[in-house]
Length: 256
Image (cartoon, rainbow, N blue to C red; front, side, top):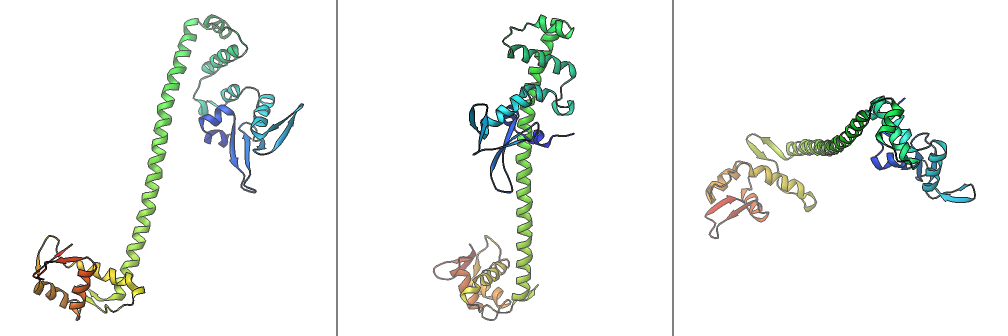
């Protein structure tokens, strides 16, 4: 059976054998054992023999006395979780536990226990270190991939909002203009609180002008007359709101 807490734990949490999570019911932070899911409140006090310990210390003591070494518990996980063969697991167990009991473990002693050659033990040690190096790269790749997935998700959300915004603008335009092609405006007389409508109208009208082209006063008026009867008000607003600029003598106009 899969242990989702172990699969989703960070390296530090795996080393500790526990995770610190916020409980949904009361928002209390709890240290949870990765191997049996027993919880210890971060701010709670627990009796241990003649001592009183906090949640962080309590979960460490619990793991050691109920499950033994974290190292050995991780080794017992399925191959599809560790990626280790039975031979590699046996080697790591002998190597780790030998050092754990203050023994000067030699390759020869491990070889005798496993009924293999000392050279095979040396290869297993080398192979494991190489796996560890490769795992760092895999973890880095996984982290970068996760970052990109999150960015992609944000982009998609922005695209959705942008699409929604475009749809809303399109609906508003249909209420503001009699026709979009040719462009014919219903009214430009809005109160200040309707300023967004005025801005949307001017942005739409500006699409009738080419960028980097200079227009005479007559050319501007000719374009605006086709859109709205009070073209002078439109022209003045385009200048006031910074959509267009003109020379001091009003002879030339251009898109800002």
